[in-house]
Length: 227
Length: 131
Image 1: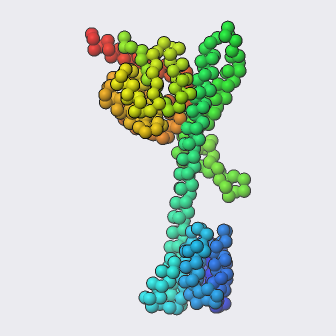
Image 2: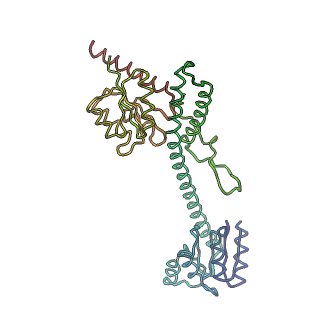
Image 3: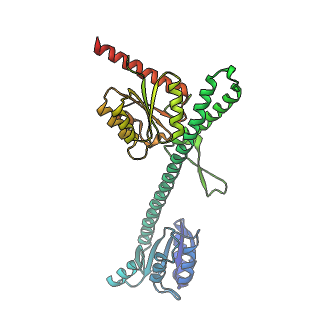
């Protein structure tokens, strides 16, 4: 997990970096609120942040407020405030500013680790949900494509069948018509595969970031063949 | 023998024209409707024994239409013809009273076979009722 550490105290920063790396995370460390905001709004930036309350430029709660307001870029973020302030009023203020959680200083490593894990879990649920939404969108698109393709395919296929019935004396080119019919069948098979999409089998495509649905993997046979 | 009357319901004119041609050339009397509401109107004025219904209709959808037809004309044999199979589950189609289910593009022969089977069944039922 990519994690941002924002703390103006070099000792605290070093300790957090060391712990997080030992727990297997990838760490970016900054020393003020403005740098934290920049890191968290970059598209490939960390998804989880440990923000010290007291920092130069922007303090922790202000960074949270910015990210939850117009300053965020819509990317899901899990924000944990770190501070020696532990009054109920402070905790409420930090959470109201947009933090997801709060860890008092001096922190206990086991507690910090558990709270980070809670954040990781929440972010992965968020990812799964987003993936499902994308899949749903793909299915809806597939449905619309099937319908829009199959109507004209039906008209082409049907009239070819009728022309073929007229026989050689009518002068129709049976060979050409069979070629058209076979092509329509191929397209029809493709739309049946699309309709059969029941699960998301995506394969990496091009740059590895975009994904396309792997039709061959995802398809199951249609209910009725047209021929 | 029951009258060879078929009703074709589809919201797209080219499909209605095509199915009419396919079925009239096989000797059936075909009427068409572009919506569920128009289909029920057509059934009331001149009932058909066999129907081919598009599922994705504006207004009343194909399943609702099939249920309504089967309630008022329980002997009618209805077939679903759809451009998008996953729109409704096959089990929903059976529950609504559809005899069979086709995805477009469907071959002319497949439509005629379905019509022939339906009329054969209807004749058998009618023979039993009058025997």
